[in-house]
Length: 441
Image 1 (cartoon, one colour):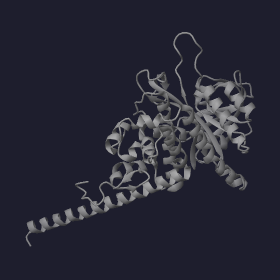
Image 2 (cartoon, one colour):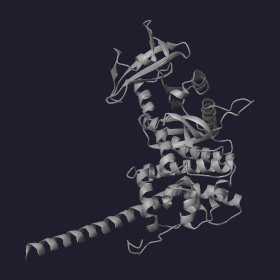
Image 3 (cartoon, one colour):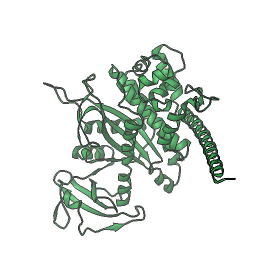
């Protein structure tokens, strides 16, 4: 055989091998997408969304058609290969006005009640299950309440909900809708459950009192959720609430301490002034720099050294300061009113704060929350609450159903690219290209 023939035969075998591998990879990805759709359907059934939400919306619309697939499409358009609701209707062959009718089917109070009820119904059995276990097991299922707000970009004066807000993510003032979210993180992130949500209204122009700020929203949401558990006979321990420096308000801290006997842990600012027991006056900026603090180490927070400092503040009174130094990170400190909670537990609670940022990042980028244009306030509430439920369903699917073997990004990617090959009747995925050649599909 000549060298030219040998080379041509070798290249032909290589192309055939690549083609076979591509076919195997495509088949594997299709199987993964089918498995993901079945896991998503299992999560929806486990959370009770089909039985309750579909019935309620169908009753409001006076329609008995199957709505679960359409509601899931409103929650997670990327699952159907789309980004916006308009594109979803075009791809699925739905009426272009269907999203507005679905999202506006319930008044905003019903949407929020649905979200709050979902959080309580998910958390109550978990709490009763852990309460009967040993102390060591309960310590792994501790609840951390986390509050934060985020701006969803919008332009124009849409129904009085759009205002100008400071965005900590982009470090500038944005035009959009400001949402305040309260979540419960179980353990180190076994499950992240949204329990309440609110949209802040911009302050009215001209005469009139200012609208409720995020401090009062967090206070009322925490009070309402604790009261909801109490009505169900669940006696929760004093809550440990974590928030960033924007929520470092003395009135809110004292309210959490006096009303709920809990602790509000926030990141300190560089401008705060504290008096130490030895008579020294230090500023927050000093706590963010290297000094000869009484450093400690703990196996509960490996790789981290910290200093626990009792101090007094002219604004807050007696406080506990935790200075944290971690390799590769800037030194910082967190503070709360004087407490007996150990330093390692406070540090671990603070590290759970990133889960609420994960929720907002998923809502904005993975689920494209900003891609919505509707014409009623109820529809905007429905849009945001449904996407928030969709975020929780994806997280529940990833962490509980799939045991952490799939991330939310992998679930979205799988169904976004292979929804035409998935067969799931409840979600209205009909395997449109099943049995068709890959090039034709």
